[in-house]
Image (cartoon, rainbow, N blue to C red; front, side, top):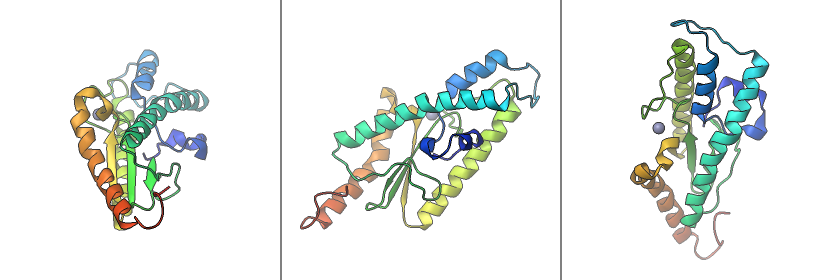
Length: 191
Ligand SMILES: [Zn+2]
């Protein structure tokens, strides 16, 4: 998941990006100055940073843990987290040449549910669009480097979107199986 600007204040330990949009959205709604199209940032930098780190540590961590559970269920191994490679994918499989991002629906602009902010719409839209451009750049760059890029939306972990998640995981499973077959007389797995 690509970073949004608040993320930088947290440093590499929390390089996994942002999620939990609902939380920040609710907070923002409670406090926002209700002026249409106004770019008021109602929080101080410190306060916003505090809120954001709270959102990050709950939201995205849990989706990443869910994805790890999915990998384990399929006996897929060999991922790296917090890779410094361009775009900082949430999971990188160096040997499979697969990069996986888990994108929060709000921050990355998924058109899946009510993720359109009503208050300070311009402010949020600009942020989201910047994230989307960054996501696209990361996908293009990693693809050019020979990685298969898999982007999973936060909402695809919901039961009703199970099928979609399976579709996204299929190429990872495939790459893993292929890798295993190719390296049978050697290592035990891409760990
Ligand atoms: Zn979504």
